[in-house]
Length: 201
Image (cartoon, rainbow, N blue to C red; front, top):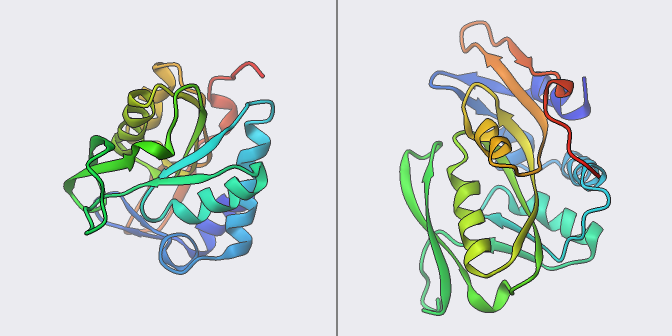
């Protein structure tokens, strides 16, 4: 059992509707030590990949992406979900359904921040159905950039997002994959990572 699985068992709370609350260390209050370990582990798993930028979606993935960008010494770009007064029309746009918030979001990255030929590492805190990651992949491709890999903290293995992305040929690494979770008993079981496909280094 790895450090993140242990942390989830210690502090995670299972709610009805396949909701795993990890607010006290990942997506409300941030435990910097855990974030640092996640970033270091993702960098280790993508050893040998050229990474020119780290891309995530606002907001919970930003902490992981920032620490990972520091390790790679590359810029971090996050896709915004809402327009602001200083938003530009010169942007790449895609659609992403939020499993957590049960709504469709239009997400965008301004064109100057993604460039043709760049190798992009996509990072997020959770993956469930994979909608957010697919939106980021769409934006990366619109820019003429390449997906170097996809790094996820927690994957909901009972949903199909991770499986679909792997079947599409993407190198996806999830540090903790929740296989089953029960809101009544609070029992969480994890998938063994050796059950996942291996990728050439």
